[in-house]
Image 1 (spheres, rainbow, N blue to C red):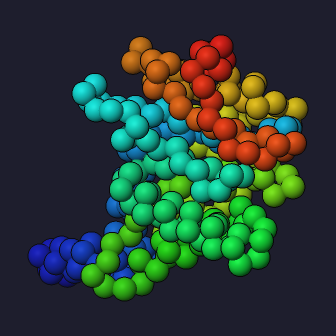
Image 2: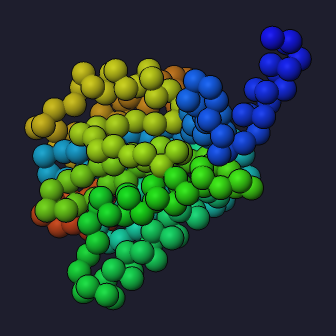
Amino acid sequence: MNNTLFTNQMMGYDRSNTMFTPDGRIIQVEYAKKTVEHGSTAIGIVCKDGVLIVIDNRNGNNLLVSDFTEKIMQIDEHIGTAISGLISDGRVLIEKSQLKAQMHRVTYDTKIDVKSITEHICKEKQLFTQFGGLRPFGVSVMIAGIDNKPRLFVTEPMGSFFEYRAAVFGEGEDKIKDKLAKSISKKLSVEKGLSLCIKLIRNFVGKEFNIDRINGFYIKTDKPIFIKFNEKEIKNAS
């Protein structure tokens, strides 16, 4: 086959979010995953007494107000999220999820379950891989909450999702994942989980690590309320 013709064909797959390559890939979705791989590192752990997510809320511009680079968001009183990738894409998905949770409360007078919120986010993501003129969401969303028990989900840019005992995404995912798998335990408390997350991020970041970069939240089983870790808790855990 002529090399120029082959290149032109591959560029066609490259530019479409609705066309499969001959080997069954959607290139635009893979580009979206690359965006997440260069995003902020987030670690989530299901603990014996709750669930937590910790994120390296790095900020390369010291002039920015940190609240406007926030990557931790609350969906409902018992559900929180962390995003990695394009923050603007993440905000759109989270705002729609917040509305979904509110409508569920008004309609059924009960809290929405964590899996339903996860499915709602993934349906929105998957929709953007089916129609021309759209692009996949360049963001992964880690969702933590309590449905009688702690639950942790991770959504992918293509709209798939999985439930985990512990998970990591963003920069350094492959390096941190193996160490996380060796360190987690069913006996781990939220407090010990925070220390573990900070340790893993510190080891990956190295000399550039600064405790002020760490942000996160937890939700405990006995009191399923979204609570952010405060500065004192983070410093004591480090």
